[in-house]
Image (tube, rainbow, N blue to C red; front, side, top):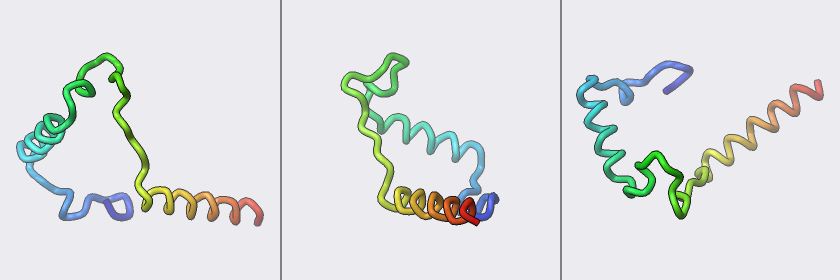
Length: 67
């Protein structure tokens, strides 16, 4: 995505998207593909890039609110 629009890299045929999703789901441990909560929980953490972006957004919001 760029500016709220899909980029060329994000465009694919529906069948290709489905195949990709099935491969990604199949790569997850079986315990997290079930409807019950995983035991132990599957570890999920934001990337350093996402954390950095979140800090920048919070700072921009703070500056805007201060006027």
